[in-house]
Length: 311
Ligand code: NAD
Image 1 (cartoon, rainbow, N blue to C red):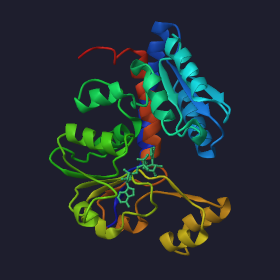
Image 2: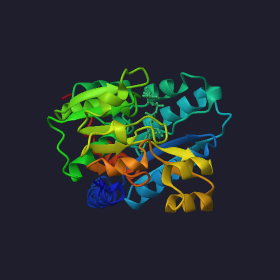
Image 3: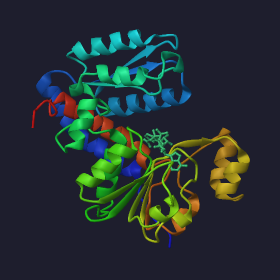
Image 4: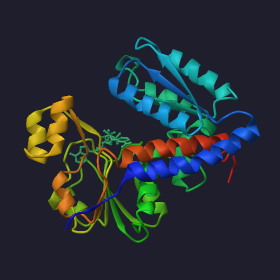
């Protein structure tokens, strides 16, 4: 069997296109475009790439994307003061602080900063109020990566209700909200993590297997039930030629790509899983573009005030 590839790039492009008239309507009505404030602290190369991708996609969709850069020496107080200013601004509907913050800020910096964001502007969906609402399945801003996965499955007509969904990974930003969203869609959900016993055997019972681990090629063929849908959330950068060759083989175009660039982005799912799975999201071009599309949708939702109700 060769898995059907779930093309996140194409689906995300269609979603972004469908948002444009809605963004235009908001802009006409409000006399200004929906505004997204992004805070970027330091010079993390991966963060720079993520932020420029968000800025480009947002601008193309008609949003006003306002990137605030702070030096790596900035303090938590500097970030909190900026967030406070964006909270008060009536041009910024959404606020996003790009992760990670510099280590020097301390291990609780990210939490303090997220807690300071006005929940109505919390387009990442990480604020405890957003999380609480998600747990209770109330209207809220939902984290972009897991909501992008649901959107991808819906577009691909993968049935979630009644399916056994196994999520590997229990982070606050992917694994936990992913499991909740699957549950709200009536899947039977199992969460696996680094202490799970017999993880392979559990994973191999999944109809839908989501890998959000951060370990290249962790999900091998034996972890996948034949015909299962496999969603690869992982983004891992390989810098060793040997690793790339071992995964993809000597003749693969991926090896040639590695040689051109000196590194290669791969997911958490081994390429040979494509021979077993029924459907599979590629990396790149699967979940990543969906994440950005969901960020734009959340910004529009925040601008329209759709998350202020007490429903
Ligand atoms: P994280 O490091 O916060 O969490 C990883 C999870 O994997 C943990 O819950 C841990 O329990 C689990 N894990 C680690 N080792 C394990 C093992 N040996 N066996 C079983 N479980 C194990 O990472 P995260 O922020 O959730 O991100 C996960 C991956 O998804 C990363 O590669 C990240 O880059 C990627 N990611 C992609 C997107 C996207 O848009 N595509 C967005 C966010 C994160």
